[in-house]
Amino acid sequence: MLSILIPVWNQGRIVKENFSHLEDVLQKMNTTYETIFIDDGSVDDTLGILQDMAKNNSFVTVISMQHQGQYEALYEG
Image 1 (tube, rainbow, N blue to C red):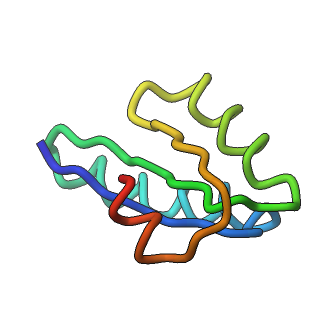
Image 2 (spheres, rainbow, N blue to C red; image 1 turned 135 degrees about the vertical axis):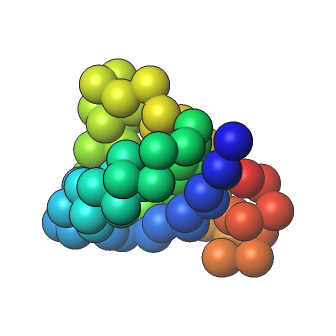
């Protein structure tokens, strides 16, 4: 299984579109995968968008944390 960790912070306006492009590539690879988004305390609508994505896609997991930086977000993932 391929696990992809994606730290995000205030990416609400582009996160869904970027994931759509990534998902197209992953589906063509014909392998099992999971995508783990780590929301690093976004103050925009990023977390809500990610939670909606996770409800509609079993390959998406969302971790929410307080803003601590990219390194901490990757470590959490």
